[in-house]
Image (cartoon, rainbow, N blue to C red; front, side, top):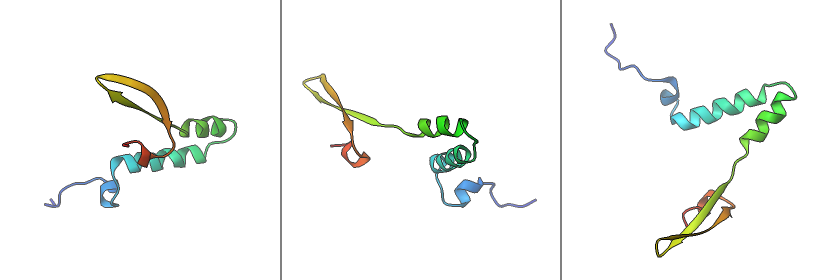
Length: 72
């Protein structure tokens, strides 16, 4: 028996689990045939909303154009 610890291949490749899942999902969507491919690619798009809280009350939710703006 080997004393080397068992690790997953995505960790060996230097990826996080989320990076691995995103890459796998994108690959699976790209190999589908039409019309399933079009429906799956539409699910790939997503957006973020952010709201400012003041005095314990949530302000209106506004769309965030890029992830760098989300924390501002």
